Image (cartoon, rainbow, N blue to C red; front, side, top):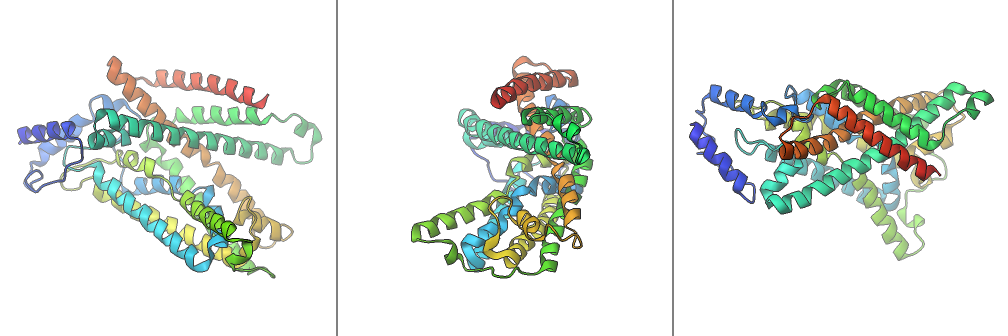
Length: 412
């Protein structure tokens, strides 16, 4: 039986595309002990030291937490603005189609992760190499994934630094001496980076972030629920309009607004670049391949995502119509129209918003692991040296020094 598995592995590694699974390749009477040994041996090699696949003790619950934490972002506040440009009918249709497309593409990735027993693609790079070959696969996978992860990390650094600065101003209050000692924007960014590096030492692998993702998921769902519940309680504003034609003065403006609305909806759906990595934290065997618990986690997480997405989009547009500000979306509308009302939970919403945005540091560590994993895998394959945690810390400090000079140059 081991010879059949070896032949399959060799065939897939030389193939230029992902081959379908046949009944003969995955018979039901495979020895369970041999599969466990194969699974154990597959993670005892170099991959057992990489942050993505170091721990495979995940399950459907931890996968749902990671997906939910990385799937709900600040872009969700812009959904009512898409309805301003598209209207009720096209807005709901576009949002439903985007959600179904996200669910379908995630289903494809979940089942491509483990096309056959003993064969797992825990990274986009591996799947791309199998699908397109070594040269083209690396060309198509390395730059987009690293660029996406790096760009998102920069966005979280800027947002996280701004949140820390806001927290400092809240602590200072009306104390002018305290406010005069505040740091510059670039220095607050560096404070956030230092906190990320410090916390990353307590979370050596992806599976260890599940507890932090649990807190972030609760904050995200609670925060989104409070937004649309408060919008329902305040009711629709007077003098608003739900006619998208009033926001456009010509056909070209209408087309531009429609494209912007579709863009707002597309920005909300994210997380494809983390599906394979999250599934890589789940142990596999013949009775329960990774696709079973992973798809269960996807179902749970996307059900909660839908509970957050659709009410914010529909209720936000119903309550504020075409008066939603372009800067901040529905949250800015709440603060604008109800800033003097302290009886309907607006101050509490601001506090929860601060706690929810502190979740940026979790996703920042999450995406930074993709960089570290890719760098260590590449350097380890070439030098045959197993990376240690000390070397990871040295690499993070080196990146911090480089980032400091970049931010100081930008600030000047």
